[in-house]
Length: 442
Image 1 (cartoon, rainbow, N blue to C red):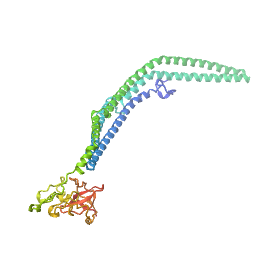
Image 2: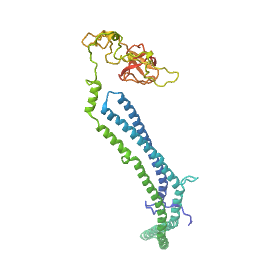
Image 3: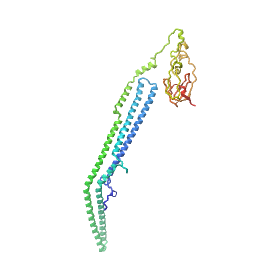
Image 4: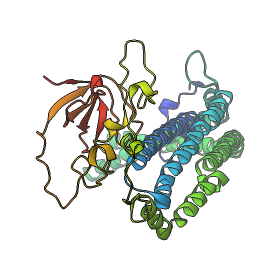
């Protein structure tokens, strides 16, 4: 019998750890530990990307809606409450960017370093720890596996001898029934006796081999337990590390424990709770309603000085040091919008502008908004021309439009003396814009 140990010749008859070769599941667990490190790193990386994407979406949403709210018709404390939603989004966005940074800068790096220190790659492939586990289990199992192989051989010999003995006895019985010659019966009888002796001999060998195997079993179990416990401790280290790391991830993800997070929503609640309908209505009444001041018409005596009186809202001329509005910093090759005077803005204002010199002091003259009870003048010819913006323009007054280069709008009024046109954006907003900032769409 060869003394070499060949695992391939042993049939695994059960799924028990003690069967030859079944320790490989414990060895595989070492490789699985490294793979699980990679999986957890991928998990953290994907979550960090989600946090970053969510933060960017919050920022864009808050910025866009803040602009819409500021340019919209909402006013007063309710406007501040609505804008507070945008502030909340911006601050929460900052917190989620911090979560992303913590996941990648702390948790991911910590796991990566631990994996590098715990699993050492070999030049020939695989991990050093996996080879150590394989060698440890093989060494602990080899003596017992070798004796098991011998026992299996003895068992096979004994069972073969039993089969031969039973076959010889069957032939002898048949020979007696057929009354064959005495010489033939004698040979068969001798064959049976020889087989019986062989059965007894192989049985004794089988029993002896089994006894020797039984004596090795306790030592085998002890050696295997020692090796198994060694790698149990290795796995225990990995499990405890993963547990601590996941708790740190939880701390980073749980914004409810962050005092800044709590402050954000406390501030939002206070701002929304501060909405006061009475104050808002009072403000609107004072600024756009009956509460506004009014220069009611009064009797005035004629005088020479009265002939030189200008309108109550004096129109500025370019020579009088007009303030430029709606001008953003431009490159040398960009256009500068024309000077916008009060006469340009008058096309959008609904306030009566008049002068004693033109109307004789009549506030309902046709040169102003006119008397609403008189016949309206014939409407001017409507203009509707599609134009495209050549440059960005940020409106500086409430009656001015804001648009980006390349944006299309509709010109609905002819250019005035100061170079301003009236137009309408695609969202329906109307207002003034510098005529030299657009071109007609052919």
